[in-house]
Image 1 (cartoon, helix red, strand yellow):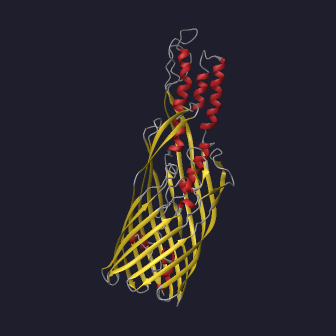
Image 2: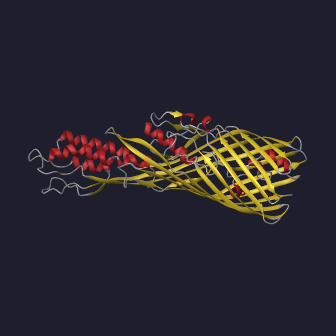
Image 3: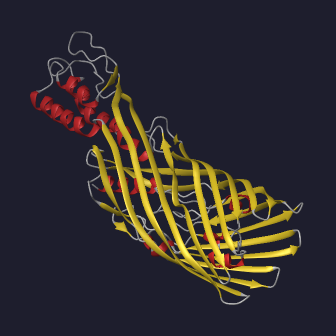
Length: 508
């Protein structure tokens, strides 16, 4: 049961992916962000998300920002577990979001601005593992040592001379490997619908009050099929049994051994009982599950305009409490892995941001940003390794996640601007948090691009960014069920991201 619960928890983490931002929160919310990586003091149309109090700096009228990104991520896990084939074994995950939209609209008049935003505030893509993950395969690989051990005593007894035995070693325990068709794909999208009002107190201070409504949807599809073991028993000199070398369904192989000449009736019954048990645990399993839920979070902001050169943006997003409900499609629950109408936690943490924009020269502007995610105060549905107990984040996260970003923009001409930026994201999760399906790593992102303003009402932004992550490792113990043997395993986690963005800003 513990193993099953940990697997469910891991599947939740795999679907609840994030591309740019915290552990589960996306902050890569415009094409201008892709090319600068620091937009927290923005006073452009995308400030609806990044610095909503700064919208008061817009001209009177309507302002829209339409954005789309294409995002690609490699998310790989390598396991050292000795019974995997091969060992160590690398599992390659492909995560992609070909379309990652962001839409922002603002109406500004005198001292008031009313704004609306729509974006994938979490998730927004799909993760595919064409050969599964260690969590799926390790128990299958354990069939080799388990059956080797259970048949070794029988081989030893049958080595005795006739009539007590065969007079040779039948090598029924010569199980050389295993095979299985394992596949998994998870998708996740948390859409955010933001509405709020900005008010200009004076020429220095603007304030914002609003809220975001979040709808969450995760899906899991996958299977474990055609589990087989590879065997090579000794070819008998006389027709004592007919078990040629090859691949067998585990239960069928145990039944074949039970039917060999000279197998005592009690042992044959035991082998047939084991075969029935193996039929149940190694049979095909299909998963088709959907999770849905919704939540609500207030948002507050302040913008400070300190002269013509310096602008400061501040924002605080409250925690979005999310309990998502599971729906089983066509009864495909993975053999009882999921339960119809059960609920799981999938919160989005509170987040505070601070941004600074400073004009060094009329043509050159520097941007900086800081994000702090209050992960420890939320629940991501994580469990403790030792007990399988469902816990809040403060039990598996040592320090909250934070990001620091800096970027430069340079106007080559009145209409053309080029930019580049760097973002450091630092995670503080413990080893208990990390798993092959849900891991968080410290990263560095480099971005660049350009913007072109055709006139005062129309601007295009294009950019690209690349994220490299610091590899993570975790040492754990794997228990071979039935033998009680614990084997140390080291998992290595690797990720990288590639972003492309294009956006259109329109004012009238």
